[in-house]
Image (tube, rainbow, N blue to C red; front, top):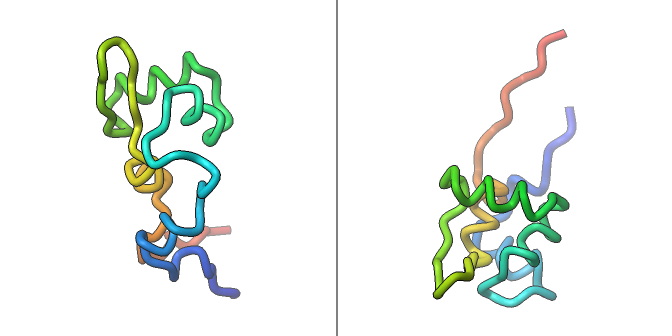
Amino acid sequence: MGTNNASNISQREAYKLMLKEYPDVMSIDQMCEVLSVSTKTGYKIIREGSICCLKVGRAYRIPKAHLISYLCIGLNTTPAPIEA
C-alpha cells in the first residue's frame, strides 16, 4: 500500500499551503465555497457546532485554522483499514 503524504504534514504547514487565496477569517459564503456546499448546508454545519466560528453582529466569521481543523488536515492519524 502507498502512503498518504497529506497526513504527514503538520497543521501549521497545512495552514501555510492550503487556502492561501482566502483571508485568515472567512465569511460564510467563502467557507461554503471552500467546502463546495450550499449556504444552507454551511449554516447547518455551524449550528451543529462542527466548525467553531465567531458571530460579529449578524454575520458569522470562520477562522481559516478552524476550517482546516474541520477538514482534519495535518492530523497524524492512520486511516482505518478497508475490509473486503
